[in-house]
Structures are given as C-alpha cells and as structure tokens.
Amino acid sequence: MPRPIILDNLGEIKRIDKSDMLSFCVEASKHYGEAAKLAKTLQIDYPKPKTIIVAGMGGSAIGGELLKDWTRDRITTPIEVCRDYSLPAYADKKTLVFVVSYSGETEESLSVFLDALKRKCMIVCISSSGKLREFAEKLGVPSLLVPSGMAPRATLPYLFMPLPIALEKLHLVSDVSSEVSETIKVLKLVSDENVPGKPLNGNFSKTLASAVDGTVPVVYGYGIYRAAAQRFKTQFNENSKVPAKWEYFPELNHNEIVGWENAKELAEGFSLIFIRDPDESIEIQRRIEITKKLVHDEGLRVFEVWCKGKSVLARMCSVICVGDFASVYLAVLRGVDPTPVRTINVLKESLAKTGIKDAVIRELERSGEK
Ligand code: F6R
Image (cartoon, rainbow, N blue to C red; front, side, top):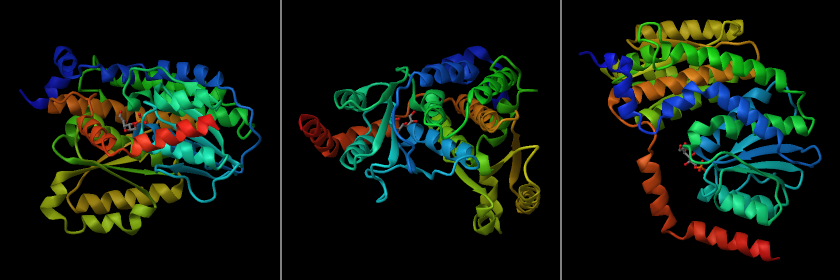
C-alpha cells in the first residue's frame, strides 16, 4: 500500500495524532473567532507608544512576526520581535512590550519581562499560566489569560489576535472586526477543503504532505507572507519532526538561489514551496516565475500554495492554515505523533538545572517586594 493512502484512513490518523493536533487545524476559524472575542477583554490604558516590541520564543513569538507583516503598510510605529534574554537598547518607557509565553515559564521570556520592568516599558503579558501570569498579576501589569492545555503552536489564534486588537485599542490601527470576520469565513473554507475526511485526491494539504515526504521542505514567502513562510517551516519541524528551511523574496534572490546551483543529487533531498497570491505585485510575480524556472532546471521539486481571501489577515491566515494541515499530515505519513516536542522539553529541563531561570525568578520576586 503506498504511504499516501494512510492519509485517507481516519482510524490510522487518529491513532498517530494522539492529542488531536488536527482538530486545531479543522477548528481554526472557531479559534480565531474566540481569540478575537477574548482579546477584546484586554484592559490597557497606555499612551501611544513610540516603538513596539513583541517578546517571546517559538510558538509564542510567531504572532509578533505576523503582526509585523500585517502592520507593515499600515502603521508608522516601528515593531520588532525580540527572541532573547534582554530588550534592544532603545527600549524605554515609550516602548510597548508584549511579553508572550504560552506556558508562562520560558526562561528567555521571564528574563525579558524583568528587563522591561527595569526599563519601565509599557508592558502587556499574554500567557495561559506560569510565573509570567503570576508576576504580571502581582505587579499589576495588564495581562491576558489564554486557554490552557494546548501546545503553544496550536494556540496561535490566542497568542496572535490580542496583538492587532491591542493596537486597535491604542488607536494605532482602525477597527479590525471586518478583517477578523472575513478571516473566520476564509478559514472555514480552507479547513473544509483540507479536513481529514476529504480524500487525498482533491485535498491540497494531503497532496502537499505526500509530495514533500522524504525531503527537506523549504518555504519561500515575501511581504505579508514572510512570517507565514516561517510558520510553515516551524510547523514542519515541530509537528512533522523534519528539518525544514524558510526564506523570503527578494532577499533569497541574492544568496539562497546560488546554493541550488549544481546541487545535483543534493537537490533531490529538498522540496521548494512558494507562497503565492493572485494579487502579488508584478515585481514579485516576475521574480517568483524566474526563480521557479531556475530552481526547476537545477532539478528541484517546486510546489505552490495560493492564498485565499481579500484582507491581509485572511490571506496570511489562509496559507498558514494549509501549512498547519500539511505539517500534521506529514507527521501521520511518517508515523510520528505531531503534538509532543520531546527535544524542546529535554532542553528546557536541562536548562532549568543551570539555575539561570531561578535567578530571574528571584529577581522578579525582589522587584515585587519594592
Ligand atoms: C511548542 C512550541 C515552542 C514553544 C517555545 C516557547 O508547541 O511551539 O516553540 O512555544 O518553546 O514556549 P512558550 O510558548 O511556552 O513560552
């Protein structure tokens, strides 16, 4: 029996996808609706910031990247994503810092929270529990509690939606509700087309997963699909447990493409996935077409994922939804449970023994006593 047939065996999918990661993809539209409702309850009373930083790691940071793409052509306030222990030098009391950590226990995020407190930044915390939640409450920092018990990357709607909605509350962007409504409709459409019950033939995510199976997926985005490409890559890593890469146009035309020159048998080990938009600019369209031909001639397999929807949010979320489905289907094909991230957990346990996180927590405790 060829491997892809597994993707049409619902019993087998359920057996492998033990924690039902697929249900988060299937119910993406419902989660975006609930996340937007929840985000509206966020209480913030800050003046307009000069700069914005979204601090977090992994599944808690990608929402910040999406915010950057989403706001790129609509606000003048610079936005940076900080995946580190400390904030960039410019961060001060005029900087709005979102500290996002799903578990509320991530060492880097707690450290950056401490740094933001020291610099008297305007802080908003987003978490489901943990020390971040505890200290935000204790120190009177505005925070949003998101539903617990999921894998951080599966809660993207809850970690991302509060960001644009907070900007709306601060009058940095106009009403986002119509964009959110369209996104919910588009996501329903995308998930209906990619649900496990929809056979391989006619199910784009299943087809993509079986096409890239056995290779390293490389995802190319651009503009509003820069973070979407990164999300594709990290979902292949964490759900499918495969190495993956991402790049974006036009930068990739100035280095990455040379790497495919004469790659010969190495090229067989990669699959290139281009994120496309029927409304992409002529500059990008030409680049993609020329690049596709060049890499195809070098022997690489090339695939395209087309966005759906009109608004920026809907278009970004539509491609992310396809990537999320494809990464889970690839896990099923490989016979691996998409949910557990053993290596991340082992690493976090080993790091905890170094005492660095405990030192940050002690400092946070002291700051609460002052
Ligand atoms: C796990 C995942 C990871 C975590 C990261 C940070 O699903 O996606 O990338 O998001 O290790 O942990 P949190 O999100 O708890 O701060």
